[in-house]
Picture (cartoon, one colour):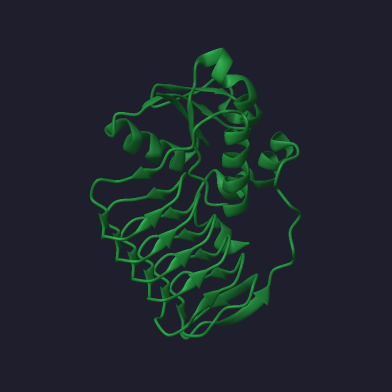
Length: 243
């Protein structure tokens, strides 16, 4: 199944290595950044910009899209648009991941090496889980949630859409909800429920600010959306913590 990766930066390069190791036929990248136009990444060409998804099945025989971007809303928007274009959005789960019985996993889910998922957890569509994450039991990760490297995620917690947990953050058992589009800073220890759009930092974590409601990225002009977000989304999955 011929596939493309969205984002030709360093993290796209990392996913290229993982996907090729898994036997996925990656035939190209799509990226809106002009500096990648006409270039190769590890011998794989950058075929064009993100809106090329609309024709790439016909022009290049591509069947599937992988979108390992750290900007949750942008990732979900692009993958939904890919589906609307008739493309598949497969999961990628590294072979070293430990998944217990009775775990439910949606589509377009990416889980990297060394992560452990306990029973009775639900992982919905377009979730990203990075390296060495510990995800305990009876959790629900809603659409577009992101757990960064080394996150320790306790039991019985409902993470709402687009919640972002930074590197080495700890979400303690005993709290119940992470609000939609909240952001947990690197190394933070969360001991209470988090309200929507809250930016949490420190030990124990406290509210630094409440993010403004962003404009929707669902549908519309992907080219414009990708340009506005690419410095956050294409280069590093944790750059969002600085914004």
